[in-house]
Image 1 (cartoon, helix red, strand yellow):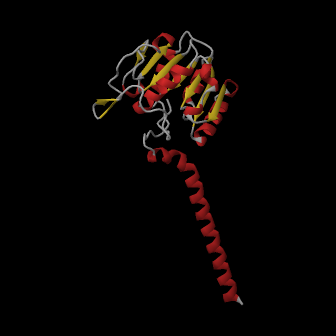
Image 2 (tube, helix red, strand yellow):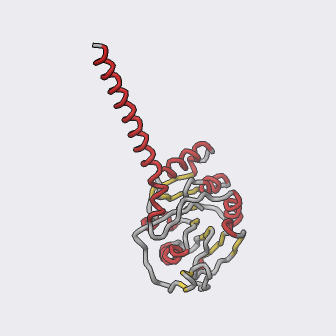
Image 3 (spheres, rainbow, N blue to C red):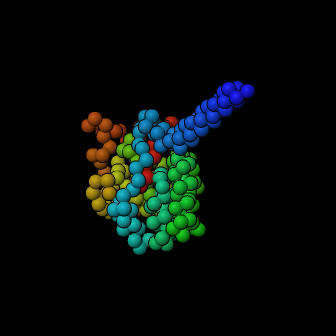
Length: 224
């Protein structure tokens, strides 16, 4: 009968609408989780894109050098791509899979996909490329202490490390450039053994003791 057919039609439409809403929510959850999750971690550091000025400052620190480059916490890949455009073979490590896939697309769009690689990886598991010539990084102060120790043990002797937004707590930079969020610091092999207490590495005004706090169980990432 017609009333029965109308009831079935309304029910089918209801199921369709419910399915669409449910699918949309699942898709939003899948996309948003890698960006929201850092806010729930102890050392929170959300995804913040590098400014064009910061990218420019990093490239200034790389003038006169060549060879492979590694960006730890590469975000949307803009530093890796910019480095590839000026002749570097560049690799980016990023924990957020959506940003890695987007980085690969941007590298393809900019015509440098053959000179770039992007990997979904935890910082503390990165070892293979630490023997390469360059490392770029930018993290919260509490992580810079642990990162300083890791890089000091694993980097090649001719490496140059460029820290963005936060300097390392004990290494003495060979060069620095820029101010505020655009600031960058360059460290060469002779810097790795130098000690220089840094006002950035403090918690409530109390300096963090060197050597404490080995790698944490949580990680938050910042594009640099």
